[in-house]
Image (cartoon, rainbow, N blue to C red; front, side):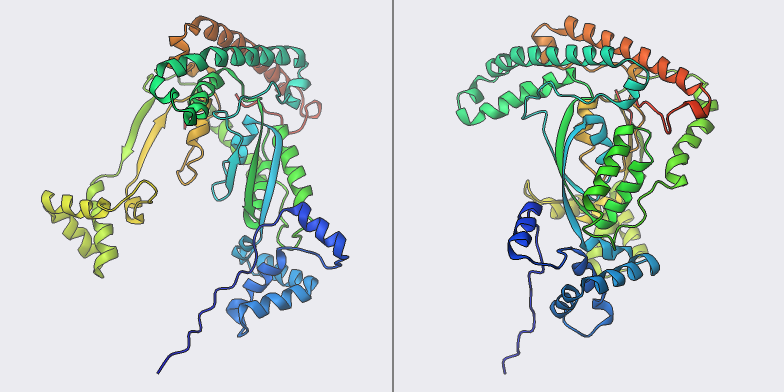
Length: 434
């Protein structure tokens, strides 16, 4: 007897360009709102309805306002926030500073593709922060950024032939041209500021969108607050039933400030700073045993206590055999087994903004960073040393640091004014230490 196959996999939706959706709606005179809220509403009912999910979607599409009412009740009254994760947005983020991008990309459960300083030769566009204008130093700021950008382009023009000469075998293949030029751009970018203008594409679900709106509304940087306002304006009418709490809470607005004030007494005690740029602070004891126990647990059906005891007593030969089994079939595109995530290490790292731009993309790590601090020094790429431009590079850094210090002092004096004389939420974010 043949058993009827009941499995069905149905495409419920996919990303479509917003402008195309708008054009199609205008051409067809389609009166109903086109919104991802109906997907969320339909999926929210799966747990409580005997109907097949495609029928639930049809019901939600037929009555959008009813679907929105259902979403508000389920997400905000009942607290099932995961329902909002089914609604997804694609966002173009254009004309923002590299500093703001760091704030945006702190949200780990979103997807980002950023204009790369390794593949694109940046023009001379940059963002002048409101905070700079408030202290009356716009001209000095602009002249400093212009100096950096000019030096950036000079460096690239010298680094490009140097890189090709150093890598003659690779340079013989025209297919490697873009890669080698990227290496030159990668080193030249050490000369440009976090005010440099860039862009990115972001994919984000409604739950994370609401969190991003709220968090960035609380950031001291005026550009971040403007970004939060514009992001809300771009999305609020698409899924109003899934995005409600968008204003900065006291927790998000005041906690960092309170922590800084609390820690001031400790910051007064000067430490003797080591120049170790990579320092292992802590490593999980018996890390091999922890990983082996997790592997045994997932594959044996035994209790974790039993697996841990077995792993602890395992001979070196058997332990090597176990881990060899884990890795023997792995390829470059494979992700390692999740059991290995049971092993944790903590590092203190001192790095440049250019290096941090790469590190922050590994979003499943827990990254806790300080503000940028010129006293930590500067990273000069080896290729810049090799072409003999270290002297000019360091002269540019000294000029930049002196301007930074002048801005910092002016900001500090403004903070000393009465509260009613200051702009709200003023702050100035200044290698980084995660």
